[in-house]
Length: 270
Image 1: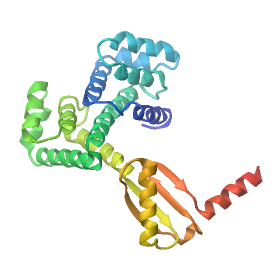
Image 2: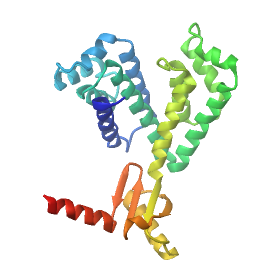
Image 3: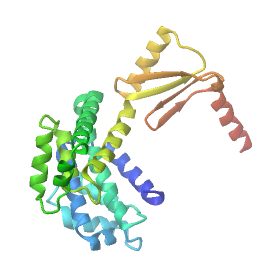
Image 4: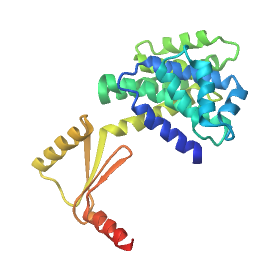
């Protein structure tokens, strides 16, 4: 996914963050259900990605389909996606799948912090390893004649102690891989978990080693700023010419002399 679709997905993920404080796994399940609706109706996908249709018209179409059947949060999330611009009809379903998986991952994170993400990643990797090592299991999960419920039951028997979020993502992967092998879709979900884990790592670049006291102050300040216990990785980079650069996930806080001089030059250049 690239271009305008990538931008629309990024906006949808940003909007999702504002809805996660009280979200449960039910939100993720509802969004995955909406993916199924989109996948089963080519005309609907075309209507929701038609650049000639207005955003309000598309949101109204979503409301007519989902209102009363899903939560207000799920409806608004799908409506926002429908109101965005997409390069192809397929992209909106792919984006909604990513948003749905991210919602489940974020719930695991909220419940148990970075440990919840680690548990989720371990569960998904364990399932991938088990299935990947058995051609019989792969055939059983790929069998078009097998019912969805049978595939889900088999999958959960393979990982009986999976967390609730892990079980949801595994069920989704085996019942609706959307043109992929189930373990290939789970590998995509693992990538999303890894991306979420970056929020718990602060990559700090400084010009010289920090003292124990300085590192403690930095740890406390960053924890307070981000509201969570971050793991700090410190790198020495003399090219910074003084100051400090901190990267947490996609966010960069740059307070180096080199950056301030560069900013000043841009201002002077007008």
